[in-house]
Each structure stands twice: as C-alpha cells, then as structure tokens.
Length: 590
Image 1 (cartoon, one colour):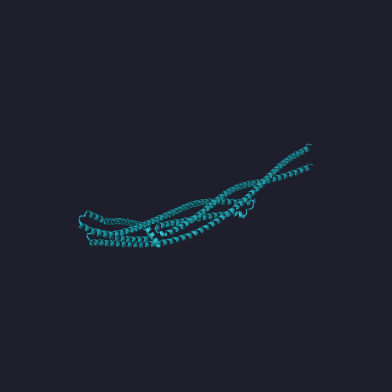
Image 2 (cartoon, rainbow, N blue to C red):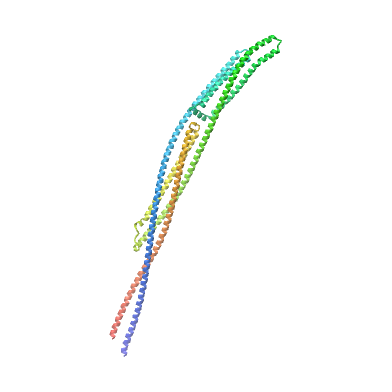
C-alpha cells in the first residue's frame, strides 16, 4: 500500500505542481495579454493622435496655401497699382517734355526779341546822338550868328551916335540928341525884336515843329534838360531886361515929349514977364514958332514910336506867354513821363519780387524732394533688409516643405507659389527703380525750372536796365511799354505754368506719399506674414518632434509587443509540452 501510495502521492504532488505552474503560466499569459491589449490601446491612441496631428498639419498647410493665394492676389493688385503709377509717371514725363519744348521755344523767342530790341535801341541811340549833334551844331551856329549880328549892330549904333553928335548944332543939341536917341533906340529896338523873333522862331522851330522834329526836340530836351532849362531862364531874363529897357526908353520918350510940350508954355510965360522988350519978344516968338513946328513933328514921331513900342511889347508879352506855356507843357509832359517810369519801375520791382517768391517756393520744393529722396533711401534699405529676411524665411519654408514631402504628409506646393518670392522681389525692385527714376526726373525738372526762373530774372533785370538807360528816348517809350506788357503777359503765363508745375509736383509728392504708405502697409503685412510663418514653423517643429516621439514610442511598443508575443508563444509551447508530459505520465500511470 505504502509502495502503491507513494507514487500516487508523488504523481499528485507533481500534478499539483504542474497545475500550479500551469496556472501561474496562464496568469502570466493573461497578464501579458492584458499588457498587449493595453499596448494596443496605447498604439491606437497614438495612431488617433497621429491622425489628428496630420489633420492639423493639413489644415495648417491649407491655411498657408490660402495665405499664399491671398498674398499673390495682393501682389497682383500692387502690380496693377504700380502699372497705373508708371502710366501716370509716363504721362507726367510727356507733359514735362512738352513744357520743356514750349520753354525752349519761348526762350528762343525771348532771345530773338531781345536781339531785335537791342538792335532797335542801338539804332535809336545812334539816331539820337546824330540828332543831338545836329541840333547842337545848329544851335551853336544860330548863337554865333546872333552874337555876330548883335556885335555888328552895336558897332553900327555907336557909329550912328558919333555921326549924330557931330552933325547936330549946339542950339538944337538937346532936342536933336533926344530925337536921335529915340530914333537910334527905335532902330535898336527893331533890331532886337528882329533878332528875338529870329531866336524865337529858331526856338519855336526847335520846340514846336511838327512830325519828326517834335520827336527830335523832345529827345533833345529829355537828354539836355538842365542846359535847356538854363537857356530858357536866360531867355526869360533877357526878356525881362528888354522890358526894363523898353520901359526906360518909354520914360525917356515921354520926358522928351513932355519937355517939348512944356516949351511953348515956358516961352509964353517968359513973354508975359518980359513985355517991355519988343525985340526980345519978337525973337522969342520967331524961336517959338520954329520950336512949335519941331515939337509937332517930334510929337508925331514919338506917338508913332510909342505905338510901335506898345505893339512890340504886346507881341513880346504874347511870345513870353507862349514860351511860358510851352515850358509848362514840357514840364507837365516830363512829370507825366516820370510818373509812368515810376509805375513801370514799380511793376518791374513787383515782378522781381514775384520771381523771388517763385524761387523761394522752388527752393522749398527742392528741399522737400531731397527729404523725400532721403526717406526713400531709408525705405529702400529697410526694404532690402525685409527682402533678405523674407528670402531666409522662404528658404526655411522650402526646407520644411521638403521635410514634409519626405514624411509624405503633404504634396509639394505648385511651382508658381515657389516662384512667387522671385516675382515679388523683381516687382519691388522695378517699383523702387521707377520711383528713383521719378525722383531723378523731378530733380532735373526742378533744376531746369530754377534755370528758367534765373533766365527770366536776368531778362527782367536787362529790361529794367534798358529802361533805366533809355528813359530819355521818349519816342521809344511806347515800344518799351508794349514790350513791358508782353513781358508781363509772358511772366503771367510763366507764373501760371509754374503754378501748374507746382500743382503737378504736389500731386506727385502726394503720389509718392501714397506709395510710401502702401510700402509701409506692405511692410507691415510682410512682417505679419513673417510672424505667421514663424508661428507655423514653431508649430511644425513641435508637431515634428511629437511625431518623432510617437514614432519612437510606436517602435518601442512594437518591439515590446513582439517580445511579449515571443514569450507567450514560448509559454504556450511550454504549456503544451507540459500537458503532453502529463498526459504521457498519466498514460504510464494508468
């Protein structure tokens, strides 16, 4: 029994140990199965997370593609705007070329007019000098002739006085001397009136002659004003001296007449006083009769002389009044012309001030253009920096796209999106080149306009100098006034053109400001897009790191799964072998 029970107990113990080991192996296999299920769940969750990451990457790529399309559309709009600005710049350039052509035409016209006016002024100056020389020669010849005639007349009068003094007797010495003096004074007065009428005729011929002689005399008076005024004053003084001499001669004649009229009264009174002497009375009566006949003839001669003197004095007064009236008219004409010259000088001064103001405006515009050019240079440097940053970012983006293409998450972007940065760079460079060309053209236009203003100012100065030099040429004054009106009209037209060009410059500066604002907006948009790209890059790097971690975890889990499966297979094989051993032992035991 004991021998029979011992193998049974041993077999049961062995069976129990085998069952315990089998149970333990089953538990181990169950735990391994649970671990495998847990690993499968974790792998499933990782795959779900991977799909979510891929969906997120697809959405990010889609948004990036949309942003790229939007950027391309904005770039097309900017290209259209720059094309419009280029057309506007070309139109302005054409207008500037037209203005330059008109300016050159007007300048050539100005030069031709100036040369013509210089020739005319030179010819008029030569004519004036010739006329002045002729007038001075005629005046000197007339003065020398009058002086010679006056000296001859004085010599003849002296000879007549000597002859009269020698011819007359002592008895009639006083009366005959008075009569002779009256005759001589009458002849002398007649000669003086003749000479004065000749001088007055000569002067009236020089002053009041019609046609071309008036113009010559006016020029002579304008150029020889002080000499003519002194000559007029001398002639007035001579007239006053002649009037004084006439009054003195008239007083002498009246004294002679009164003396002759008093002689009979004196004789009669003496006759009344000397009645006792008959011989004396007779002699006195005879002498009285002779003297009465002489006084009658003297009275008639003196009255005729007085009448002639009155007529001559009236003619002299009339001539003097005419001369004074002519002097007044000449002085009024001179004052009127001086006023006109002052008005012309004021207008020329006003035009010079306007030209100076226009020059100041152009200097301010040139300074503003220099400032705008400097700002554009700064913007260009910033643009170059932004382009470099954008090129770097685009290069990094291309690298990320290549990585994503290797990971087979997304396909490559279209070729047009790759070429987009190059197009943007070329468009931007073309935009800034056009802006630089516009600035150069504006600077050249400013220099040309400043040169035109200088030419106009020099032209105005030349005109002013010509007017100041040739203000004595009164015949040319009307032509100078017409020239001044033409210059003022041309200055007004040039002022309008300058205003139009200033308006164009203002519009161009506004366009440049708009372009600067658009560039700033583009810069802000580029910076914003660069920030977005940086965010996308960060997200991509994070997603890629997560993907790599997930892949590593997945590979580790797959390796663990394979090892667990191998262990399970080994345990199953061991369990099967144990079952076979048990079955064989049971069979042997039975």
